[in-house]
Every structure is written in structure tokens, then in C-alpha cells.
Image 1 (spheres, rainbow, N blue to C red):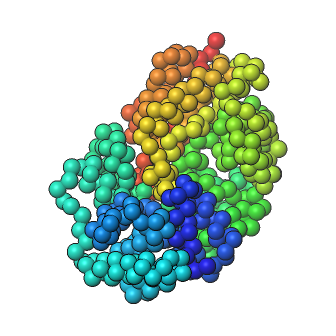
Image 2 (cartoon, rainbow, N blue to C red):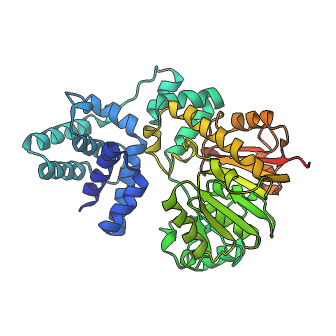
Length: 448
């Protein structure tokens, strides 16, 4: 299977089966190993085509007589990935792109399809300098087409953040995510791990965002490194590392992680607690419980107990006011991780946001009674939606006046959150630190 054949299969399945591009890409590369350069090309074509889908379709529609929607899904995907290469990848000769696409069309289809693919792509190449986007669109339409995001999403962000910031968010979503790892501080300090990586020629630097984080360039898949295998590091986004900092659990505490899978934040909590005390890690998906256990075993952590349960039902299993800290990393729309999961922006529907808010509200109402007086409740999401974030927390505090927002304990967190309008709430946008979009709120329950 060639790089472009693999990219075609992935893109077709993402559209037809609603498969996750990142998971499917990893599965395909494991099943059909490619040379490093070809694996990089597949990754570039898959993510790039999905990232720029709106714009690609806008260009293609003027070259496909019957319109893209009338084509078979694989033919549509073949034209899309080919145009992506022609417009966005300068290092690949145009004739090589056309030849490869025509050969694939001959194998998968018939002479009529290969002839159509050849004609469309040659027309695109002849008119490449004339490919322009309209300049007279309203802001939401212009940004949607220029940065290839759904118009409804852009309109919501303009309302929340304004036009200039929305443009920065969308541009950041189309950039490559950084490679980041969290150092297991039970084994090494971040400075020690950084020195070890640099000694082996890895281009690495300390995270400006997360105290335990390291950022790497051209490091490949960190899951295949000995540091990962020995439990010295965990692959995690910088924004996500801030959650355990916000909880700030102390050794010996009893902590509840309500929606814990796949275990990144759970294990970070355990490391910060020096692996003493206990962490109850709950998840509603039984198969994901195994992922938490795998992470705990790899990191040699003994303080984590996994529980298969809907977090809404946890009050049936545990006594009221029995935990020192509770983390609710809530299910959310996920709009902060579009850079890592570009297909998410096309799969998500606006009405889903209201539905997910109902779940978030139910979870907060269900778990807060399990917190001891004086304890800490941290609510977090990987989205930027006001209704899921600031609005959700404000509504919760209004209904539960025994809770109040509290300043973050970590100096770095406090400095980052200084720009926020409210103490104890932090909203990170994707363009600010080249990290995931994330929200964290820290609340304390009043003493009895």
C-alpha cells in the first residue's frame, strides 16, 4: 500500500464511517508499516486534507461538472487529497500528484473515473494561480472559508472572543500540534529529564505552561522511547498537565477522579501525592478502565483504585463528604483539541453543545456532595465554549452557595490565570501557548 493509497482509505473511512482520523491513522501504520518519509507523507496528507476541507471543496466545486456531492466517496477523497498536495505542499511536483491519482483511480475504478480525475487535476494545475477566495464575505463566512471551519463554530467564537481572536484560534487549529511529555517527578526532576534528552540529541525545552512538562521537536512517537517504557514520562498536552496543578492534592489525601480514562490526569495526581493516600479513578466505559490500569502499572503507581461506574451514580457507592479533593474532567464538546483531531470540527453539530451541558450539570450536581467541608473541587474541560465553562461554573455556584471560587495555588497557574476576568477560572485558547484549548475552575467547599 502506497502512502497516497493509505491516505485515501483513511480519508474515505473518516467520511463514511465517522472514524477518528488519529486512531485510524495509527492502526493503518501499524498494519501496513511504511518508511519514515512515507509515514510522514500519509500523516501530512490526512491531517492537511481534513484541516482544509472547506477550502478544498470550494476550489474543487468549480472544476467538477456535476459537483463533489454526486461523486463516490473514494473519488471525492482522491480529488481532495490531490488538490491539497497541489495547493498546500510545494515540495511535490504537480505531475507526480496527477500520475499517482490517475493510477489509483484506474485500480479502484474504471477508465471513465480515471479520465475525469486526470482532467480535473490538470485543470486545477493550469489555473492554480487563479484559485482565489471571495473577499466580500461577512466575517463568519470569510473566516470559515479562509481557515476551513464550520460557519456555526466561527460565528459562536466571534460572539465570545471577537473577530481577531477567532481568526487566531482558527489559524492555530490548522497548525501542527507540539509534542509534549510530562515528567514522572517520582523518578526525575523536569530539569534532569530535559538534560538526559538533550544529551541524546533530542531538541527539547522546558514547557512555559506546565511545571512538569517538556516540549520536543522531531522526537517521533514518544510511546516507543525507553523513557516512556520505563515510566519516566507520560505523553500529555501541556494544558492538560495544569489540571493536577489546580487540584494540588497532598500526600495521604483521598481523591476522586470522576471521569478518569485514559488516566493521564489520574496518574499525574498520584505523582503529585508521592503515590501515598488513595485515588479513586472512575469511568463509565469498562474497556477504558484497562487504559487507566495500564498507565498506573507503567508508572509503577500503587495508590490508584479503578472503578467502573457512571459518575452520576458514585454517591450510591461512597459516603457523603468522604473525599478531600474531587476532579471532574467533564465530557465536553472537545472544541479545544481540533488541532489534534481535525475531523472533530466537521463531525460536531451545534445542537450537541446544549445536550452536553445537561450532562455536565448533572455530573456536578451528582458528585459535589462527596466532597468534605473545606475540600477542593476542580472542574475542567478541553473546550472553549462559555456555556460549558464559565457559564456552567457560575450557575453551579449560584445553586450551591457552599462552594466558592478560589485562586490557583501554583504560581505559574496564577500568573496564567491573571488575564481571566474571575479568580479561580482559567481559559486557555489554542493560539496562546500552542497547546490545546482548555478550561479549569478551582472551587472550595466551605467549612461546616
